[in-house]
Amino acid sequence: IKKIGVLTSGGDAPGMNAAVSSVIRYASSNNIEVFVVRDGYKGLIHDWIEKADLNYAQSILTRGGTAIGSARLPEFADQKIREKGVANLQKHGIEALVVIGGDGSYMGAQRLTEMGINCIGLPGTIDNDIVSSDYTIGFDTALNTVVEAIDKIRDSMQSHNRAAVVEVMGNHCGDLALYAATATGAEVLSTTEAKLSEQEIVEQVTTLAQKKKRSVIVVVSEKMYPDVHALAEKIEAGSGYITRATVLGHIQRGGTPSAMDRYLAITSGMFAVDQLIAGHGGLCVGLDGTTLVAHDINQALSMPKQDKIKEINKIRSLNAEFIKQ
Ligand code: F6P
Image 1 (cartoon, rainbow, N blue to C red):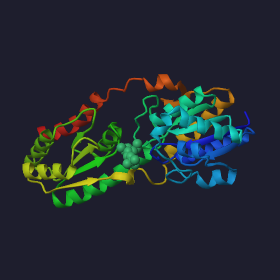
Image 2: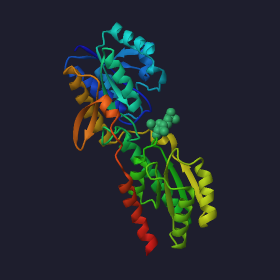
Image 3: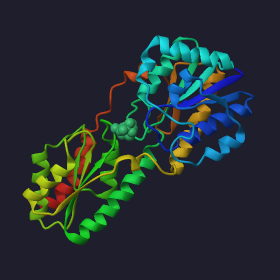
């Protein structure tokens, strides 16, 4: 194999640059030329494809976001659109591709493999919602951003004897909310996997108010309640705490990647290139414990979600203790 491409697709995640950098450096050390495809699958069909060098690889390694750009392109499900992408790759002599993104991006990688371009997917998303990998590139950095933000909100709530609702990202996966609530000692947690009704949240906060808890943090996953500001008003009316709401939003997607995200990105980038050198395609890289493994993409996409309800209830029980005292 002489020429490969690399692209990032879907929502950007801290550590994507480290993965791209790793692919460029490791492939180059194996005498393979690397081309970056700008703006994900969109760049593939528009021929936004450029040769990458080692200086570029070094310059992006530690940066947040994705320097080569990303996009969401639902049209890539269309065979005719993909044919344009394949033709552009062939024009440059690119035989294979590393695709860094989420589940949706893996689907495109599988289809391209079926069309003769071997693709390897890397798990890049802050959501940690790729079932075939214990952790995804970007999750650790986003989690640290969320924790830092909640700690700051706590300082203020504790000073003023207030409650706060904090909405975090996750796209139907509660991991960011669960890990952040655990790390910050948040009193109330509601995620997609274990949703509390608005009434239940009000009741839990009201009980804590009756127990004279000085401050209360309610962590909720996005896409669960129509309006967290309205939820804060209901909590205020029920519990008596002055209650504020914060939607952390895209602050969670940016920032310098943590050492753990860089480590995962760089090791999985090399692992992906090894798969391509071995002539494999249609695979995605996942972390299984501390070991990197390659899964067949079709199988990976149909793996059942891990049941987190026990874990969530256990974390919730830490605050049940406060209520009992
Ligand atoms: O997948 C990453 C993510 O940030 C999700 O947490 C969120 O639901 C979504 O992307 C937001 O997408 P956009 O940036 O396109 O609004």
